[in-house]
Length: 124
Image 1: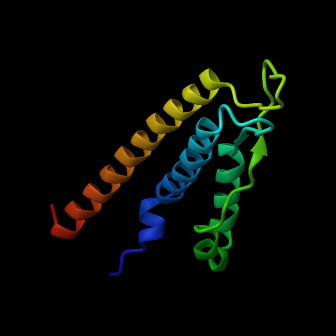
Image 2: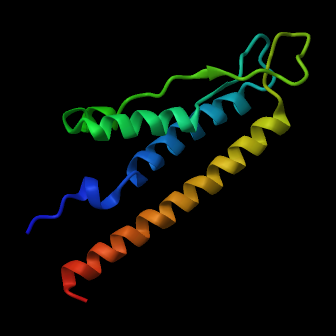
């Protein structure tokens, strides 16, 4: 009997891909904290997961969806700067740290899934 890895691993590979893409966006925000007129960007996790769920309902689109870049949104600053830059260092650092923790959590879940598959394959 063949194992359907997409079904066995669930949303975890998509979640890791999203967290990786979001880390790049947040790192870009942090790198441009002093760039005049730079607009902070972010990606909506709920929107990305809705897109992944929708793609999984349509199996023929699921593979194509895994490599899709998610829509970037602009972050609204709590305290706008005079030079037009909307990056707030504390906010971006907190978002980056939260994303890193979520990445680690997703990686742990994926490792548990793979460990379970390994045990099933070995007949344990």
